[in-house]
Length: 280
Length: 280
Image 1: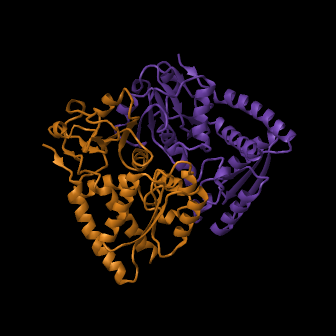
Image 2: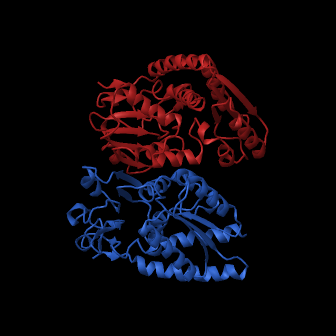
Image 3: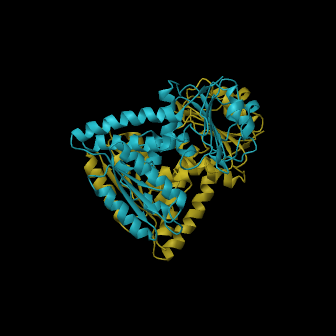
């Protein structure tokens, strides 16, 4: 039976450590501060940003939450620039996608690279690709955190990245291009996906389809990172049939309770790191 | 027998077309202009930059060549900024590697993204990864040009990228992540390289070893893009044993005379495109 890679438990541990670190920084007169910019009226985005605010404040961080329901690209760019230029702000985040009609690239590009704690701007992604030091997008950092916490070596393995968005799969591929690994990737709808998945020592999915990966598709001993988030009513399912694949895999992130709970935590971890570094 | 993908012939064709395009732009009062910044005293770099200047002028372009033998990061950054800000300059190139002791990242980052015709700066690489419009590094553009000129479809194929530098393999992987392909990549010294190469419909090598890929290692019908440049005295050899692999492959770039002759041409093509766009 596979080890269940428990994102909730891991997140709780990291949050505890972060709380101590925040207290320590406050003792030195620095309060780690995250600015969050939300545009438009999407309810899901609003709820998600509020969760980020709540979680940050829970561990003693400060937040600057700006919600611009109706706005222009110029106004958001000006706000993001102002927040980036504020020495009391250590991390700046723009909730994506931005509201319809706004220029997402222009907006994220206004974030100071040193404060790009969500790994949103093109230059951050370019640095990941060339192996320069920078913050990783939360989803990518979450995967690396799970490998660290469960003492698994990400290197020397054949990774298969099945499906890749700009927020997770692509920056993951970029990161892996600097490591001692073999990597195979394909689009989420690639007809050759099943045969590629079979070769994976580590399988990372972003397929947007409930149980698209079944037990017969994977190699014995595979480590599975399931980034699926497929709702049926209020119930959520992964891209991978967790129960059946657990009999074959050596380790697997469940859905829910896998990488999901780590996303906000990694954002906060990046912000605390930025605060520690920027306040030296 | 494989089609020989003739980089010299392809380059000559493109150069001819570029010359017409330059004349056309000049007729509109715009002279495509490339600025080149060289640091240090490396003879190979100096010769290569001079070749770029000569080739640009041959098709009627203008160049601004700056050679700073002894310099500081601040001075180079200031120069690159000045060139970037000059409306008469359409493309800015810094010859890499920069001289020892200089901060390469700070220097390339001073290039205006709109004038980054050699695909050097982090934000350009990030844009390639997310599929935003931008200039591709010459080596990547050369591969795509060969596919276009020989009417080969890069999509629907399994690419294997064996070895990957920041200048070629990594941006190629980033580009491919936006296409309808399967991709496998590994480091140049990966012990599993041979088994991965076997699966390639398109094989792209950056292995730095003479004839590291032999005929028995590849699948029948493979398209081979050999980026090797391995010198033995004055003779240069590819990463692939061209002659033997030609019996198995459907198409192959020879060394010399494959992608090499296209590199400067693609830089000039990007600059002419920048001139056409920036002068609208």
